[in-house]
Image 1 (cartoon, rainbow, N blue to C red):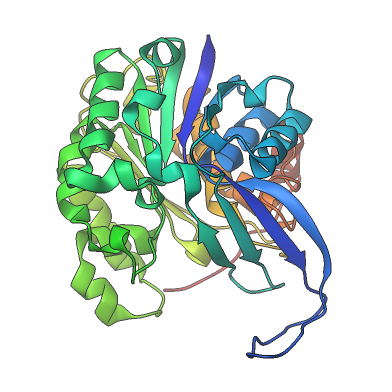
Image 2 (cartoon, rainbow, N blue to C red):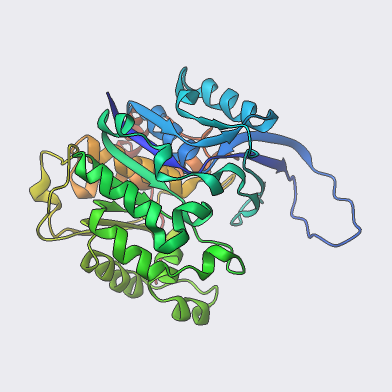
Length: 359
C-alpha cells in the first residue's frame, strides 16, 4: 500500500549549464557548462518530491527500451530504491526528453519531445495499482496525445475508474505548445467531463486561464494575471465539479479554495475536513536565491499533497506547498533543492521571510 500514486508524463531532462545570460542567434556557437541529466514531468518531479518529503509513493509512467529510458530509471533509483519499478517499458516508442533552458533569475524554456507519453492510455494505470493507494495524482494530459484526444475520453475514464475504486483523485496540468495540436483541443469541455471526478485540481494560473477562457488568455498576452482574475477562474473550476482547487500563481504565491460541501472524496479525506470546506486562502512565496525554476510547480503540488495526506489545515498545507516549491528553486533541476519535511518545517519556524507582491 502506498499513500500516493503519481501517474502521467515523464521524460529525461537535459539541462545545459549557463554561467551568464545568452541570446540565441542562428549560426552562432554558444559555450555552456556541464549538462545535468535529471528526470522531468509530473511523475518524476512530484513523485520524487513526495518521496523526499517522507510520503510512501509509487510512480507510473511510460518509457522506451532505449538509452534515455535506462537513464530515467537510473535517476529515479538514485532517489529511492524501487521507484522505477512502476515504469511501463515500450519497445516501439522512444523515451520522451526535454532540453531545458534555465537561466538564473528567469523563467525556463523547454524543447520537448513527447515520445512514449503520446501513447500512454488509462490502461497503463492498472486497477491493482489504483486499489493499493490512498490518492492518485495525474499530471500533464496536455503533453499526452491519447489522454486528450476524443474529448479527453481516456483521462475521464481513468479518473472515473479511480473514484469507483474509492481513491482520492488529484489533477495537474501544463500549458501546451500554443501552436500544437494539444492547444486546439477543447479544454473547457474536457474539464467539464473530468472535474466531477477530480477531488484536487492543481493547475497554475496561466493553465487555468487558457483552459477556461482561451480567447481572453490569448488577448491578455504575457502580462501577470491579477489576483481577482485568479479567484474568479477558481470559482468557475469549483462550480464545474472540482472539490478543492489550488492555483500556482508564480510570485503571487498559491491560492487555495474548496467547496462548502464535499462529495465522496475517497480514502485520503483528511480527518479535519471541516476546516477545508469553504476555505479561501492566499499564501505568499518564501524568499530564496533562485538557481532555477524547473519543476517548481510540481514541487509545490507535492507539498500541498503531503499536507493533505497528513491532515494539515488549509493554511498549513498551502504554506507547506509554497515552502517545498521555494526549496525546489534553490536547485538547477527539479529535485536537488528539496529537503525533508522536518528540515523544511524547521526553516519556516525559524522565520523564513516571504515575498511581498501586489497585484
